[in-house]
Figure (tube, rainbow, N blue to C red):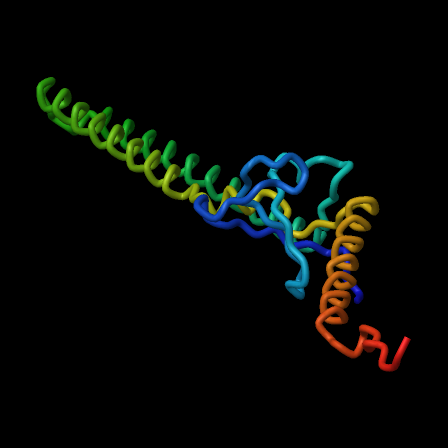
Length: 186
């Protein structure tokens, strides 16, 4: 029986929640070994507790994630700069003396521009909200943990005791374990 101290975080449905191993509150977070030999339910709060477990972080993934975030920030910055340049360009076109628009035409154009800008801003907000799906939020926390020695030893003892009790039940079912009835006179 070799159980490694590597635990993967899984989430179950609300209907399948069970009591936390530590505090007995209903929880949907499950820590499970990679070989599916052992599992237990725990609260998300306990996962951040330094006395209970510590995350196993893959440095390559963290570096790739930071690089991706930096690229996204740069792209957003370039988009904003481009939008500002386009606004300035449109502003210069309106100030062109050759354009002979009346004040009403300008007000209507401004109203249309404001509506388009408001609509674009609304679409951007919707895209930003829909872009933040629950899966992405859930990926912010680590998914692989190592239990601290006391908790890991408790899990090992529990598995060992379960195996011993199973072996004892099997022994009790076997009739050859019991002594035979004495034969002969007293």
